[in-house]
Image 1: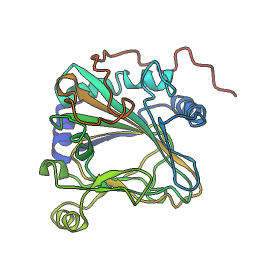
Image 2 (image 1 turned 120 degrees about the vertical axis):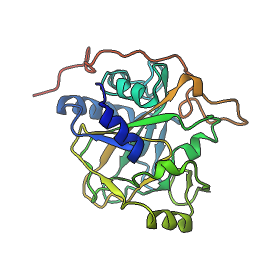
Image 3 (image 1 turned 30 degrees about the horizontal axis):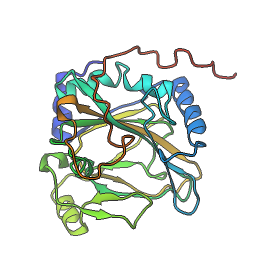
Image 4 (image 1 turned 45 degrees about the horizontal axis):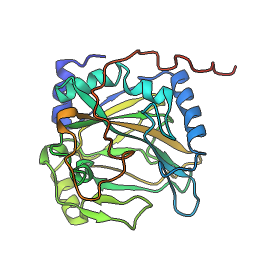
Length: 271
């Protein structure tokens, strides 16, 4: 899938692009079946909610090995629908996947993700420059009621902002923007945009765009998967006590665009 000049300009202006229902219902169903299989695995690749023990995040579903390896997720990450736009957005054919994570917002008690910039964390991984892009696939319908993602348009152009480590709000440690600075930026920016859509919808977004999400107030769980693409030339430098490979990949082999049939070899759906 090739992006137009207008789409590229909009991404650089706003910091994100949204493509409704880029993946089919059958593809989404296959990926959700994979999530059901993977979330039952006892591994540190799966982060669980405090109290309930339900899976909040599954990592490293894009590789061919490891406890959370998944053929459909691996194929999706190399499909023309994701990899070609990522190559255009980063103006580089040599990309690798920095990490993949599948996030679940559990019905009623799925917790928030505070306002943050992703590069605020990846900088601490030793990643030299914010030359990455993330492709997010909605595996359930995303709405404001079930805690959809919000972007502050154009906030990526502010560059990396001073952040503080929050290890108390949720089960996930996150470098977040202090409240006072966040309100100041909001007062000078367009209103946050709710990223809603039907299953299969894809959003690409910049690593320094300010984004966050609220609680899931609905009766249904909501899953999304994130593919983070990085330039091979921008791979992390050595740092003291690096995060595990499933969060900060050390597989820097350049990806090559694969088939658009992400379900090849998968069992047919029932019915």
